[in-house]
Length: 318
Image 1 (cartoon, rainbow, N blue to C red):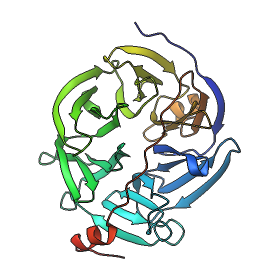
Image 2: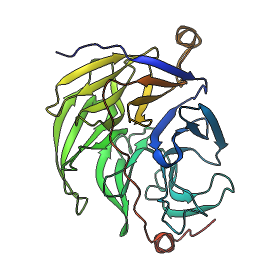
Image 3: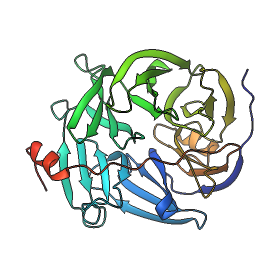
Image 4: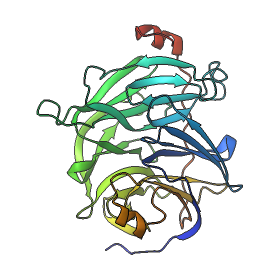
């Protein structure tokens, strides 16, 4: 039976995101980075100084990561991003964009959603069905980007989420949110190949699994969209803890700070009525908590042959 522990709130950063998402800790800059998908903005918060930077975007970004500091391309393109329409290197200061892949550009109702770097440095991102029709109801896919290019790894998805890997990279976790279930897959860390889906956990009634991470105890911490809570699952799939939140729509989580015990939670105002927004004054904010457990070091993106990948995608540089 899960215990319902209260987290200690350290800060509520008043950013009023429509759909905050994709948050991760970047140790080198001592900050968390995240995106407001529908607000078309990127954010960086230095912690503990609480200094905030924000960049407007030409197109929605759903998830992203920083290039490895040793990557020769990092000075020109500091970010690898999943724009709504595809994967690209991007410079938020200059707007410079190098397109790498647009695997679903023929599907007008789909956009990229949740994504993450695996412990071997590959970038994974899924596409979701944003405008469902009879033809595309489950046409989302999960893609892997590595030195060989962009490859489809899962298909038949509606809203891919909760992507993360256990400590030794023997398992990948992933959810198709509307199904209210988190799956796990045997994972080959050398090749990045997946085994068959197995059911890991079913989320509480009325909630959908959103962004997730693995903490140092090999437990999965997941934002419960619609559930006003974060759920912490043990490695056997049992619910170890349920942390109540002051907002109904938490979206993604990251653990950072010097001891990797500061919990950052992105949230959303999208779809909430005026009355609901009144009842949830912190909706859309970045919530910062003291976490009773520790996180794991965020993996670094591998150095990849970006120009070759861009040449393979015929759009080239913009």
